[in-house]
Image (cartoon, rainbow, N blue to C red; front, side):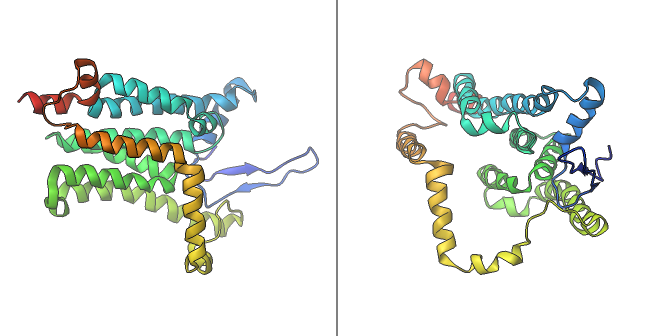
Length: 272
């Protein structure tokens, strides 16, 4: 039960008992908490489900707050419903995988990031950096949240984004613990234990990275599996509708639709 020396019991039958510390992993929050509950309730089926389900519910709460901040209560409720019935969220939200924890932390990170940008209170950088670091510790691939963060920063500060000191302070606060864990897990634990969950290094894939067919296959997979044609069509329709609507100004929409279109900040700007 040492979070910083995760050990796996590899037994697949009563006759085998190889165990050992592994490296090359994300911060094992979900399995660690599950193991702790096993000590309390015993190894029962529901215990293996309850931790990821709890993080999925926490993620839903932060996702609701995030959407409500921009689009109001009605859109936030509908968005949270769609999130919870999406196949990927349903699947990952009940399994021993890092996704439930990482998604919950990423929704919280984006929410607090926007709150922090709009606030003059310096202490708000603390939850922002904390949840961002936990996101990257839980799933480094979710560094993709830097894209919406960059958009929010550029939207608020414009070209001054690149010379805003507090953004660099935030980046350092979030990056240092992630870099420390990566160095510990990959550079220390793997040589010590000889056991690794890490896949081949990026350099091992250079023959694929220089092959144009690799990127074509990635694009096809994104089209078929990640985005899917229906989502592309709906997104295109949404973009066309956005050209008609003005989120930060008057609108001809009825009051019910208006409350869904303009969030609290937008309504304040519109009325002022």
